[in-house]
Image (cartoon, rainbow, N blue to C red):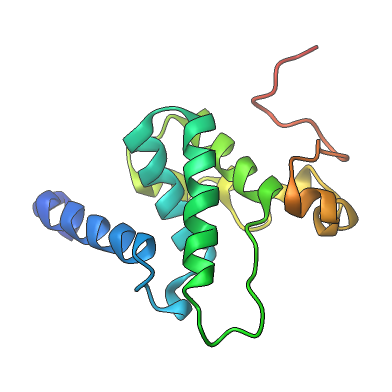
Length: 145
């Protein structure tokens, strides 16, 4: 049975575009800013710019801007640099044809980073504010050295 997106792809593209735009202009409701939402905007940004380094830089800026829009927050939550970069690199390594390829792949699951980093490493200030190399297992797309 075909999905709604298979039979009406322009409508899905419009909905995806509206979702990403709501994130970028700060109007996406907080309860919709989930792990999957992070993957959606990362995938869309990577598709737009084509380069993971550029996408990572843009996403970092956009997530920070989105977080500043939460006027009810007691404090502004910064973008977790290591996790953001990990997911951009994971998506880039997949060369996904569709968003479903991203959302369903094990390297993009919420728990995927725990295969590569210990909880202590990911909770560190260094990981939150910059890139920290994995302390458990090499990333599968890393060059063999």
